[in-house]
Image 1 (cartoon, rainbow, N blue to C red):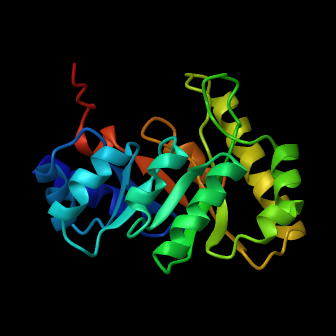
Image 2: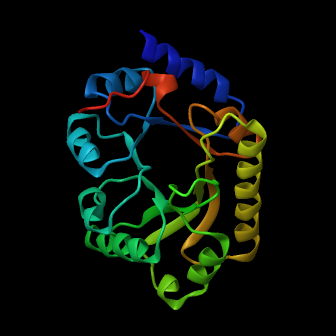
Amino acid sequence: MEIEENIKEFQNYLSNKNCKLIAVSKTKPVGDLLKAYQAGQRDFGENKVQELRDKQPELPPDIRWHMIGHLQSNKVKYIAPYVHLIHSVDSLKLLMEINKQAIKNDRIIPCLLQLHIAEEESKFGFDENELKEMLDSMDFMNLLNIKIIGLMGMATFTENEQQIRKEFRSLKKTFEFFKNHYSLPNADWKEISMGMSGDYQIAIEEGSTMIRVGSSIFGERIYHT
């Protein structure tokens, strides 16, 4: 019953907050996802295309699939028919490929632009100037089969709550800037995807509208050797 109970706890916790739970199901078996689904969860996040491809046909069709991991351009075609939201767009090249595959599937695919907010070098994402440059470009204006609906960011992996809060606050500030200054036909600034199992409470306090939570629902990740 643990997964169901964890989902119910999150549902109660988020009931009066403007924030959606994305259950991060990477490495977890289909049976675990079904338990979460039966408890009312509909938004699931995967960070590998292959895993998403394997699970999607085995699970109910009303699940909203979120691609939250680093996405390679050559793999977009596999998820373009059904992906609900791509959180991790970190280049114009990737966005152009998403647009191309969206056209093939007669869809407009919602995306979040990933901003690099952490002090760690390992995280992907735009910086603010790169983002402005891209949004000002004709290449971007011509992408009519994608819809930018907000920003995504990952805080530094640290125990220092002040640093995490500072990074989330900076993402919210950047979001507000783009919302106020970039009114574009292919953008609708409404979502901020930030916060994971270790820092989601801080993220919500700082304005997150989507938290990506795995281990607090499903238990620790299973690593395959």
